[in-house]
Structures are given as C-alpha cells and as structure tokens.
Amino acid sequence: MAPIIPIIPIIHCLLPYKETYTPQNAGAVALTVEGGFTNSAFSKNAVVFGRDLSTPSLGDTLYKGLAPRQSWLMGKNIGLARAYLHHIKQHGAPDLLEVHGRLQVAEYIGRKRPDLNMGLYLHNDPRDMKAGKTVSMRRALLDRMTVIYCVSDYLRSCFLDGIHVSGEDAEKVIVIPIAADRLLKQPPSKDKLISIIGRMVPEKGMLAAAEALASVLPRYPDWNVIFAGAQRFEDAPPSAYEASIADALDPIREQAIMTGFIPRPEIMDIQNRSAIILAPSEWQEPAGRVVIEALACGAALITSRRGGIPEYAEGRAIILDEGKPADLAEALERLITDENWRLSWQKKAWADYPFDTAHMLAKLDKARYHALGITG
Image 1 (cartoon, one colour):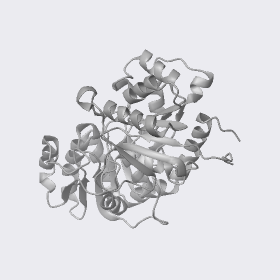
Image 2 (tube, rainbow, N blue to C red; image 1 turned 135 degrees about the vertical axis):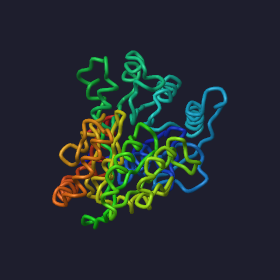
Image 3 (spheres, helix red, strand yellow; image 1 turned 180 degrees about the horizontal axis):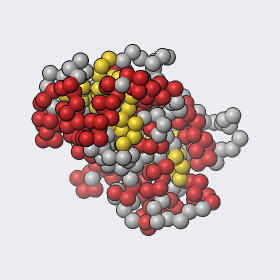
Image 4 (cartoon, rainbow, N blue to C red; image 1 turned 90 degrees about the vertical axis):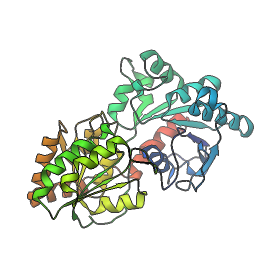
C-alpha cells in the first residue's frame, strides 16, 4: 500500500533541450516522462520543464516552456538549466527535481543550488556524456543526488563502473524499466508484414536489416516490409545513410516502403499489423523502446544481445548474438516459412508482458517516496 500523503509534494522534471514534448514528435525520453506522471501519486503537483513548444504538449501533466538563458555562451542545455534556476528563484523550488538525461545539467544545477533535493534519470551510458566520463565525475554525482534512476541494470552498471558502493549509496542507484501500455485487449490480427521502426542511423542496424530483407523477400512476394522513421524525430531531408538503406532495398522495391518520419498513431498501427518486427541494434542499447513496443503488440521480434535489451527480451524474443545480415536473414526466413514457430514467438510476446505503466509507476513512485523522506 502506498503511503498516505497529507500534502502532495511538488515534483519538477527537467528535460534535455532537444526533447520535443509533443504527441507528434515524442521520443523515448518524452514518453518515459509522460508515463512517469500519468496516474502517479504525485501527478497533481508535477511540472515538466523543457524548451518552448509551438504545439500542445504531450499528456496531461502541466508543461512549462523555458527560453534558454545565455545559450550562446554555455550551450542550450546549460542555458535551459539557467532558465530553470531563474524560474524557481522567482516562483519557488520543488520538493524534488528530476533531471533527465543530461549529467552536466544535473551537475550544474546541483552546484548552483546545493539546497535542492535532486534526482538524475539516466537514459544513456553516462561514461560517454559530459560530467560523467570519469569515475570521479560520476562519484560526485552519486554523492550529490538523492536518487539516480536507470532504465536498465546494464545502465546502472555503466554508471557504477569503477565505483564501489554499498549500503545507502547502492540503494540510491535503482532500475526503473521503461514502459509501454497495451491499448488492445486481445492480440491484434497480423498481416504478412515486417517492420523496422526507429531512427535511421548506423547504430540501430538498419542497413544490415535492409540487406537481410533484400536477400530473403524475393522468394516470398506475398510479404512486405516497412521502414518507419528518419535520422531525427522530425521532418528533414533524407540522410546519406537513409539513401544507402534505400539502395539496399532496391531488389525488393515492390515489397518495401520507407515512410520517413511519421506520427506515433501511424507507427502504432504498423506495429499492431506487423507479424515480425526487427530491432537489430549494433550499439549497446540502454533499453530499447522499440523492443517493448514490439512485445506489447504481440509481434515475433528479432533483436540483438546488446546492452539492456536482454533484460526486456530474454525468453520473449529471438535474440541474436550478432546482428549481421546473414544471421538476420536466417531468422527471418524461418519465421516466414515456419508459421508455428512464428506464432509461438507472438504468443510468448503477448503472454509475458510486465512492462506496462502500472508496474513502472509502482517502482518509480516508491523511489520518489524514499527520495522525499516519506514513509508508510
């Protein structure tokens, strides 16, 4: 049972500057934030801060757009941090500030306002980020933050790499899995459709997927494939990498579509119709939202053993040790030709799905109670 809170504390969330908190352009961080306040015990007094928006914001949580201050000198993320500090100086500080993604922002705000109760929400490997590249930098953040949320145990190990922790310090760095709610009561009917959804960048393994599909699909003309996404989460001219994907798909141009950037409702429709979904990440994926979305819609998923992906996909999807075109092609062909095998993976994905928002919120709000010193 959740503790009884006589007065609901105020929680602020600060997004990275690039994060567009709108239904049309929401990325993984925005969706995690939105899910983290929907039906939360703290949602009535929560405010999400980010850059100014020209369209309505995502979800029902109060959104406050800020204009970065002196970004020409310090960059847009620190400029946004400065704008946030100016805002709370005028309007009052929260009971808890959750900084998403940007370690340098957490470090900057923590240094400028040592009185603030702060949490850091990690979505990527901190060892590759400003203010997190060294053990001493991460140790300083660990000492300063009240709580550090990680979207996978893999990411937690990245933050603690080289840092010995025990007791309260160990409990401070916690795993909060990402979440995606199912909107359907029953498994959706599937078309002979394969989809690859996400940013069209090399680390996502998109070219390898295209090469695998081009080698397999000519033998199965009743199957089609959709590549949905672009280099960035916005309308933009195709990149050279996207052009290379299109070239690789040329042998199956009658069966393949590249949509470019499309809104989330269209993405969700494609996912629901897809019998097979590919997520062959080549980099150490911290978690992989496309992985849980594929499982949520009951697709037969082929993914890779990278980063935090196995924490979500083990036993629920086909996990390849190497996402090379030949490996992808072999798994694809078997799924296409062996209907029982394909259906078995679809059933596994549907039957074992603990990644809904309610499960995530139970862990997140428990961590918030602790960070706020609320017991019950």
